[in-house]
Length: 179
Image (tube, rainbow, N blue to C red; front, side, top):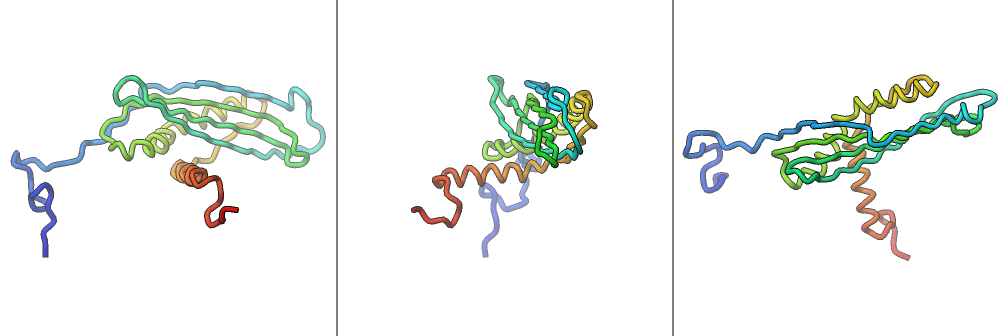
């Protein structure tokens, strides 16, 4: 039987200075958030729409993160595309595109966990503001406000990892033989 050790000391032992060794605390501050780009096209006002209207909303989300020149600072960009189509004739009613960004100061996150942190936690912090901007823009464009459902950024991140893995395999679905 062996004892678990940490740097040669038994597990649970305290360092010589009497303080418990702890991993560095994760610190995240939102330094700024802003609209990078915004577009709203009201097709109904431009072309008109006849007959029954039964709107269908489609939302697409993409994320990007960039290191800034200052240590521990990152810019995270969330791109949203909200398209409303009339389900009766599939004509577009409006199109709203929003690029919303935040500048974050992040410290204490291990390098191997930084990418998921930037692509999950940072967009999660920005989401309530994005939701409000989209609702206001759509309402001001002449439509009922759109209360976007919460987004599962963990699932979105996993989908992107799976897509990249499939692309790295030559773009073929798993289990499919090469022809």
